[in-house]
Length: 41
Image (cartoon, rainbow, N blue to C red):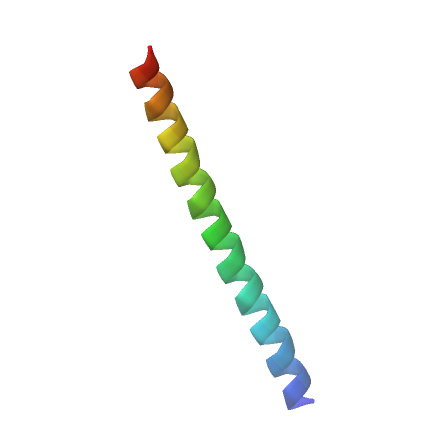
């Protein structure tokens, strides 16, 4: 029972980390794209 809870907790933790990392990457990409498009104008 404890191992099941631990597995669910670990999976949720990993998913959260991946989600946050993905969001940060998207934000950085959007910022870079925005600044580049401003410089091109």
